[in-house]
Length: 456
Image (cartoon, rainbow, N blue to C red):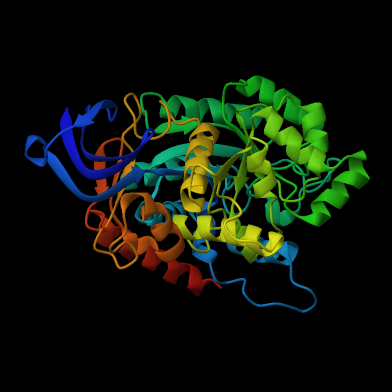
């Protein structure tokens, strides 16, 4: 057991001062109470907040950030961006994926994320043939997360078709494609690999309604077990909605909710284009809406109706998706600013009990914990896993601020530089803004980027 002292800490009961957390070697918070710095093993000078879950990430896309920022010929959209992604993904080796994921997960920790949901669909070798070990690429994600020390919910993706109605896969998708039997075998192998690793959760992810058909979705969900977290891309683009209507006569969210038992184990990623009835139905189901504001803005997806959804009791979480820029503060800031631009008002996502930043932070904290199936209760409380970030009180964004203003000062006036220290499962993985393996991790990433540039 290790005793940690905090000047100020955001607990499930609000801000508290001069608190000692007793943390077991397993990472669980055993107790929390008043105390003095001299009674602790580790003293934290600053403001501590719970670590955040990043519910949606495609690790390999970190390496293509900035490569798709040129338009034409013709209108540029998600669909033209996807072609750049297909060209890029065809080059990546297992060693390169591990290096890219390592750099990305390091950046997530330094941004305030302490766990990640990796929506992983890069399964096969560059020519589309399965590796001798079908879990080769998934294993590289597991290895990167373990090396960096971030909590991981691995969401291997079922990707079978190129479009609604069971359209044949495209050549560019050859590294993604699995049938139901192969997918369930992959899940079984990953669950065995994760056994005994409390920081790792194995979920499942049908890529989208266009990439699976109804029978496959039903069979795989039944075979995998309904207790696993289940994530799906849905209603991200207006063309996707139109194509789903042509196929089924239903909108994507409408079809899913009518044909699948969606509950609190589900995370509907994006869900951008929803009707009022669909929005209310998602809230009633208990599912989490996985929002990725930076990526959604970058791709021109649209803006999710977050204000109405939260007011209806809906649950949200945040993800960095394409990883073009990794910042918890910027995800929250852009989520709120998108609502402001839509509604023509300020502080749209705040409420009578919490400031805007605090309300969004707490909603995303609880929704993210649920969506990733992380162990224990969410937040900093007895019985929870000790995932926390410590913000630098000397940072200009926080200078002179009382504790209750700290979240808003970070999230609306600060950046990743506000985060000073990070713990995952009680283990300090970032100290004074540095990871103990940071130089090696970043050197390896730079070498991979040079290799990939040479193949362009």
